[in-house]
Length: 320
Image (cartoon, rainbow, N blue to C red; front, side, top):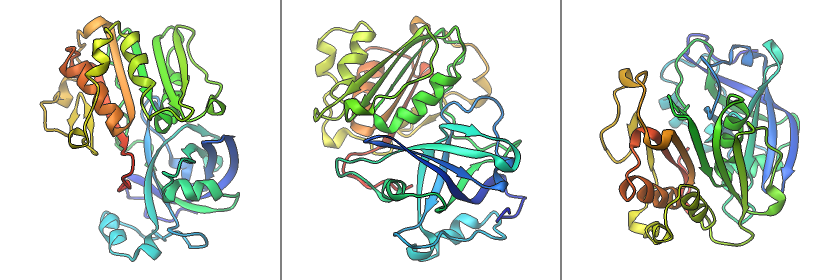
């Protein structure tokens, strides 16, 4: 049964783990279900749709109740002790399965076996069928946000990410039109993390297992080579600690650095972008910062044709 007032413009609902599948050493897939997810929906493709997941703060703890929640739910939730409110994390809707009361959200979660595991990954790693969590997800017919893949009139796409962006990239690839062209580069911890991917024939998919190499070290040269930039561009991607913006988020309509962005009313206008290419790059903030500098600042790619998203920062706990 729904746990919240139906007037909320989003779904804030308790869900149950219906299925657990270990995809690889670094990834686990969960199916989350509830009759309340019958109202789940977006206007158009899901692309890289983000949603929030609230999980218990510790093994054996319960999830918070949002029965009767109204528009003040977030501030009220923050006032609760962490033992009661749990922990909120952000993930990508990998797929939606079923319909009506049998609707389920599929989410792929990185387990970070290298020691970076936070509370979300820890919960996912021990999840079993029947476990409970709370989702904040799009309600059909209501604006929600959380989709950054906006290729507009671009003829080609370039998708780039580390393991945290794999769910979003694979979701995008599966939804691209059959005649789409471009490339995708996915850096993962291990060769055993490579997954089968549904994608258009005209989009090449390259997996880059690090196997103990430095995070992001394989993505940088692969992307620069793909774009035809010279070897000298590789040195330009070096980023110091002081230069890393842990909240890096640069899209045509939002800038964490305060740079000028497009007015939303202009989004429907075709953009004459370089090489007809749209770039979507996400993952660890240092990696994304280095590629942003190389592509936008040093090589003149228009910000209207890019999305740079720092999903996480190595060694820094995420807020949500």
